[in-house]
Image (cartoon, rainbow, N blue to C red; front, side, top):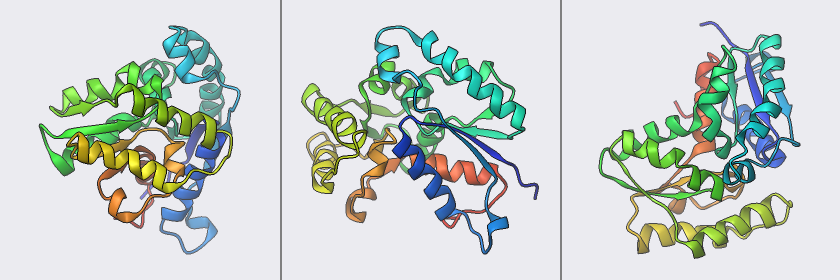
Length: 237
């Protein structure tokens, strides 16, 4: 099998990028250094905030900034590009038009995973930034697969944004029970079949197995697809 290098546009945020890198290494079947994936990681932390540009209808600010990253990865000769940031996937089609290199669509891959597990007509909760929720990227994707997306009410959404921006991005501790409580609320009070962890900052928070079995983590899906497309095997196969 041909092994292919992976480009990563990170920094959204830096901690999530670090966790993504660790997870790729952790889940790649390897006995020596040479068995791992060649990666080029651009930790572009100064990229404009994705939620802000989406809500302000200023997407060109993000696209202009990320264009250089795509050019650098093209020059480096990577075969695929992973972007461990759900909100940025609002611009997936526009970014893909800017490069001939395949940009892994984390949103679509995540929804395909959920569809394979739950099928049509399932009800899915989503925990994400305001930008991801308001952009409708998961909503329109669910419609394509005949699944129903449940978006949190204002109270839950404010709580989620507080965890993302005031805790994880500031490198402050988050109690697992606090995050698990939000997940449980969507599962129990709103009868969701599963919950998408649709923000890579939230993917940094450990949760118990009895809770995680009802979740599909978009970062975990991206890790799996990145390993697969690089011609390697993951320990979950």
